[in-house]
Image: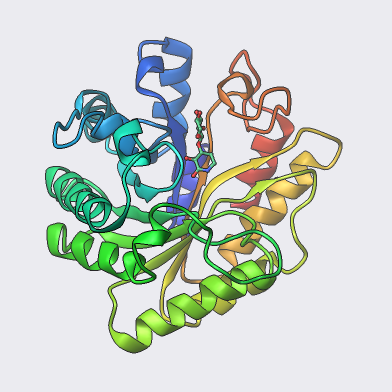
Length: 298
Ligand code: XIL
């Protein structure tokens, strides 16, 4: 096939991009999106600060623009993200304890219910583990409501949208290391106790290389009985960029439960990693060598 989505579909996978609602009026942007991708993630529009800017007042206008564009063009939607310590609305940042716990659960229930039936996979919880060797949870006001906040969020999301795949998503978990092993142990425990979890997202924001044990790490999670997804892929520009994209694509294809790849933006100029030119299309919208490497690997 001659496009990313059709080639991925031939291998039973989706190929997605993070998109911004305010760019959907750019014909170059939308032209690439509609031609090459069959899944989208809202880069910011479904986060807590965007969807509940004042407590109990929900705003779905920007998220709906993304969902409507996706549905009109036959694309699936990854939901991102119900609970995350970053991009909390200011009212939530100043909360704690049982009041915050109920606000968190209300947020999960309300947003997952609103989008019920429209989301193929939700990042229910994003980035809850600490970097480094501790294997501990990240400290946050969410974590300080009690160690059971993650499983409570997954149970609330399942009740609200039973058909959506429910994912845990994080970064620096792409190789086998103390942080990914801590996530692995949480997933294993959730499966053993019947906490509803269906997938693990690996953000995959890389420097110029990908970890040598990337595939092995994806595989060990899949062996727990969850799907795995590459959720926010971007790789710094440099002489190895195309090769690293090829290796990342091959890693997903080598793991039968790796169900899809999402790149975190379309053109280099759309990337959150300013100056790194980490995406598949240059700032004019031309295909890069990295694009061809992915297409040929699929
Ligand atoms: C980033 C967006 O790309 C930026 O536009 C925003 O300013 C900050 O968040 N991990 C995640 C994503 O899970 O939500 C982040 O997205 C990138 C890191």
